[in-house]
Image 1 (tube, rainbow, N blue to C red):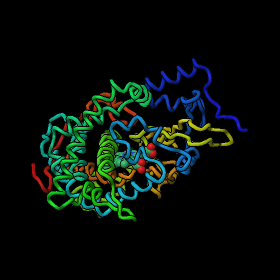
Image 2 (spheres, rainbow, N blue to C red):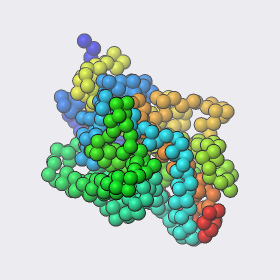
Image 3 (cartoon, helix red, strand yellow):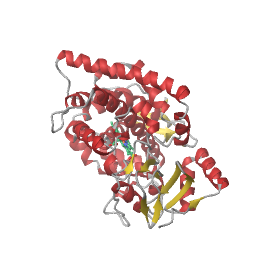
Image 4 (cartoon, rainbow, N blue to C red):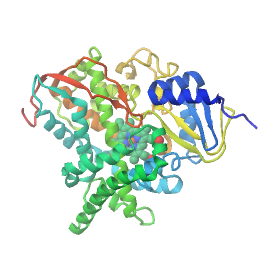
Length: 447
Ligand code: HEM
């Protein structure tokens, strides 16, 4: 029988790794890769972990959908996302739900969001004045939350600012914690879950009321909520009420912190890397924002890809081995929690030359030394059967927001480091404060 993965076996070394991951998860993961290579293991029994890093490991995870499950691995998300959310569903139930949710993210539908996304960004920029200091990340985070809810679930829910900044944010914050902390909190049901359950219950009640109001009006609506409510499988069966509510909760949980995090990093990197802001601005300046125009902004595409490479909001993610597996001739026992990491892959020098450098030109197929990305080398949206269902929505939202900022604003970053926090949505810890040098009038809404 093959040996298990080589790894850390002494309790002291294990404690050192745990402390390092708790102190600085990003450096901790990179150090775990330096120390253990592309496949290592640690822990015992029910707490056995495998760290799988790099393209070969990613391809192994993405191909193994039947043998790698999410329900147990993501148990910590259930109090907010619900039992039937895609990210905690396996097997046939996952396939069925995913087929029913997929049409809601069809590219034609996403194209129809561009004008609203741009108008919302313009309305925010309209409130800014030259000379003012603005934390662009935080301002756009709130805007992204409202816009996401508006486009996916309608104006009525989006207008309820008390719901968005109150119970919805409390529910989302409850799962925005280090994985180890979530596992510990999940073991304390009374303490952790009462507050979270109350917050989720409030949001779910509002979603139910929204669906009931639409049913009474005889129009389910053309947004994602309406599409989910109207969806039918080959047998004519739709999503149950519980399934609809869980999808709504989990789309909000998965969607807006990740997207606004990427926006914050992109804005910061563009302003602080010589020449990038000017080149991107030259591309978008004065061009009316249509879906076709967005698709033609290739330099902006490179900026977005490079941002998602260097700062992938989902730093690492997990699966459970549903049976004994073998990787590179080593045994992975059934029940092992597998950890794979977009962040580590994106910063491996063997995969990406000068991995720490923000260089949008590395995405230009005509550039010398261009290394084409593959699903196993560039994975900000994961891969395999659980690949992000909202990736096109997210990249469209990012490009629209950046295009409006480029067209209308010039800023000078305030001095001081911009450091990350969180591994489920890695974002600038203290925001991205800038002093606005110029705020130009928007074409639709002059300042
Ligand atoms: C830049 C923004 C985003 C990033 C970096 C991101 C990243 C990811 C990643 C890495 C996964 C896979 C997790 C895993 O396999 O364990 C995922 C799954 C998912 N994402 Fe996103 N996401 C983003 C935006 C969105 C948006 C806007 C939505 C919806 C509005 C969304 C909805 C989902 C859902 C529902 C899943 C689970 C899919 C399934 O299990 O079948 N995400 N996302």
